[in-house]
Image (cartoon, rainbow, N blue to C red):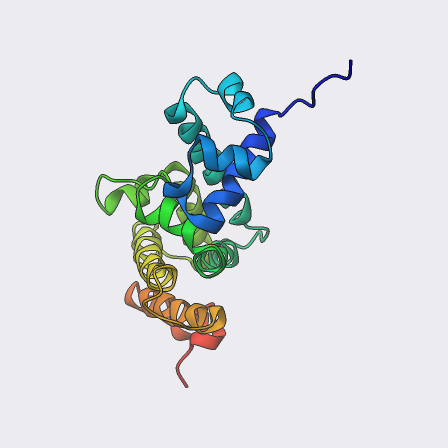
Length: 202
């Protein structure tokens, strides 16, 4: 007798992520997911005790997926920060259900203790140090710049993900870069040192 094909936990999470991106998190249940995989509900029950355990695993899987897309390649701190913002907006435009789930419905691990938590985040603390060094400004100034830019970028991305605005990713990043320049000027960075050339005023 031939052995039954095993449906791995990875396959379940891959298909769950696909369903989340296409139809939204609320569409996911045992029946819809087993149909997406093309199997009975049994493999899901083997790997997960209940639906809540599956959803928790899927939240972590979705967050890892999004974070992997936002991992910057540049060594320069400002360029790396821009790459993260660009990827963030790209997710909002191309995978709005994922964006809404992670960053508007509270499943993305964003700090919930006020705006200062953005500056206190351990990854952001390291980035703030690099930005301060690159631009020869204080870490306090670099922290305000990072905080303000994250808030502004999140706002634009949220408008795109919810369909309130319909603009190109390039236009949205131009607006983000213009705002980022203004935040740097606000912190005393001379115009000639402003990094985002396309956002400079003529």
